[in-house]
Amino acid sequence: MAEPTPDWSFPAGSGDEPERLQDLATRLASEDLVADMAGVWPERLWGILAEFGATRWAFPAVSGEAIDRSSLVRRYAKVAEGSLTAAFILTQHDAAIRRLFAASAPGKARAEERLERIAAGEVFPTVGISQLTTSRRHGTRAMVATETESGYRLDGAMPWVTAAERADLFVTGGVFDDGRQLLAAVPRDRPGLTVKPAFDLAALGASRTSEILCDGVLIDRDEVTAGPSMDVMATPGLAGTGGLETSALAVGQARAALVALAKEADHRDELAEPVASLAASWRAISSGLIAAAEGRADAPAPGLIRGEANDLVLRATQAYLTARKGSGFLRSEPAQLWARQALFFLVWSCPGPVANAAIRDLAGCST
Image (cartoon, rainbow, N blue to C red):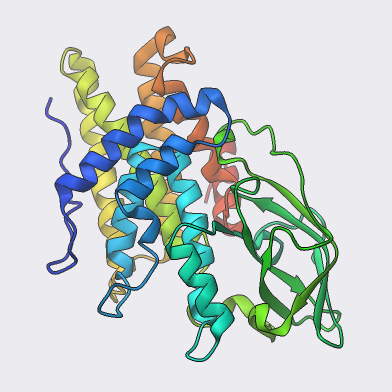
């Protein structure tokens, strides 16, 4: 049974080399299991991303034009194929950069200096905005914003912040009493900001995701990156950290499991039909994902893509775990790692309708 060969080629002129991206995925895969077992900040994974230039993907090119979204989606999928931990950290890092770029403008010296330092690798940014999107663990106003004479004050929590212990800058958001919201870039050393110990997650522990508390954290007006406005996340250029990018990571990890399952099928005839079925699903979902990233009118809705990608990554990883039998359950095997990591797509920036549909499907409820 030949390995599935989906088309992750890049549009002409994008400057990407498929062979180099495959090399990146292979290098990441060689460190992924080690990083998961160690459970500490994965310096080697991040170093590989930096070596291949991935940490600068969110920056505009020399021509002044950013990498198009479909190319980024393809790249993120390839990174996830090698290491979901690396992909998770990178997408949160890049989400922060995109928000900072959206707020930058000629003449804003502080914003320009901030981006220059990030590009040079001197500052590590990440996002802490789940309190404005999918997380409501602390209520609808997990982070309260109030106006001061010189700027604003933040009180509350960022419930889920990836790479929190490593980051130097947090792009976060707060909600005013009247419902308006703002986004701001807050340095790690700002008085009143406390990074709590990393969560003991079932998977992706090396992402060092934790909660950050803000107790009277003051921010200047030139540190505000968007708002105040009633729906700050709808500001142009501020696409969420979930959406198509998250679906791309699910598609990438599903491909890793599918390729591994296909290799098992080389000497097990009973796996040929399951591999063919999963491969067909992978191709259909990835095609829809790219169509959506390209903005085509015939593309499936992002919510539909996310639901299908979630389902696929769960089926592909569990199929490979089952095929590997008892040996796949060892901590030294990627099968158990992928199966655990795939569960995160059920809770990571998962829209309510997608989550509800998954619960109904698991419960055997009719649609």
